[in-house]
Amino acid sequence: MAFAPFDWIDDEARRRADSGLVRTLRPRPAETELLDLASNDYLGLTRHPEVTAAAADAAHRWGAGATGSRLVTGSTALHAELERELADFCGFEAALVLSSGYAANLAALTALTGRGSLIVSDAGNHASIVDGCRLSRAETAVVPHADPDAARKSLHAHDGRALVVTDSVFSVDGDAAPLAALAEVCRDEGAALLVDDAHGLGVLGEGGRGAVAAAGLAGGDGVVATLTLSKSLGSQGGAVLGPARVIDHLVNTARTFIFDTGLAPAAAGAALGSLRLLRREPERAGRARAVATSLYGQLTAAGLTAVRPDAAVVSVRAPSADAAVSWAADCRTAGMAVGCFRPPSVPDGVSRLRLTARADLTDEQIATAVAIVRRTAPDA
Image 1 (spheres, rainbow, N blue to C red):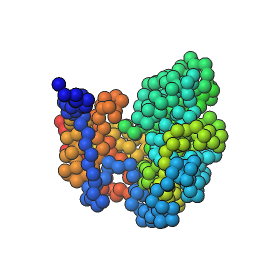
Image 2: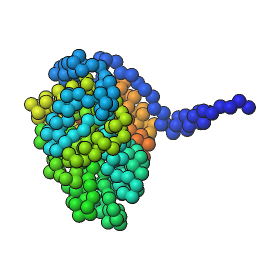
Image 3: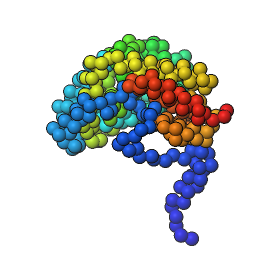
């Protein structure tokens, strides 16, 4: 019998197909007439002329790539400028820019914990947090979603270094974490608090300064935040923000920083351009929230089951994984792109359409989106 080391992949593929969980790549064209409620471009900045010009200018000046890791040749004056302005905008002492939000979470979790320490992680946290917990070699306690009392119990039973980690806004349902209550638990139990503010930056807080700032926690000695540059800032990359000694520690110990190529200058330039534009136009944050509220109100008024959004994510329940896939496809055929979340992306096993509000959507476009979702909705 011939040796076929990858035949097991065919079995896995059949199981995915039988469960309605096959995922496929769909390259998008540069220009499309689809109404976009699928991307994370919350502030509508990824194609803003100032942002694309900043990206182009950075590429012309600094080159197409970073040329190496940040500790070798991959740090430019542009990276340092972005870090200073991110820290100042979000209210932290220092910041460190990495190649992605995923890398930022892995950096923070692995560098700030380790063997003998405890991580208390919300059951609804993003996959990058889950993977960071696994790589950290720390003991990990996964606690019920948005439950500060459960976090307190886990911390109280542990003797030693500990860290609580949570999304600020959960990407599946768009609900916000009880940050103030979690911070109180951490203070009482002597633990650090790590908040992934990927979906809060640009949407929550004064002028879009994020959920951590909105909760009054930015700049706290025991508080660290991670974020992505690929959502509200319309670019690519990630960052860790916190006390200067924490950032210095990451520079010396975080493997996804030390051994990864630095963020491309064009991405750094675009993120900096978006950040400066947001400073000048802080009303974009409020508009993104208003669009989300309007979508939710109109969808629920139409009889659909949606989750009240705390930021810019609007989740609409589907009766099954297959129904969610068909629903999303029917929306696309009708002229609108939406997200489709199915297991294992959803921790509760409930499939959903995921609509993302954008600050640049008009009231007419909101009404069109609601009409398409309603018209294509599957039977319960």
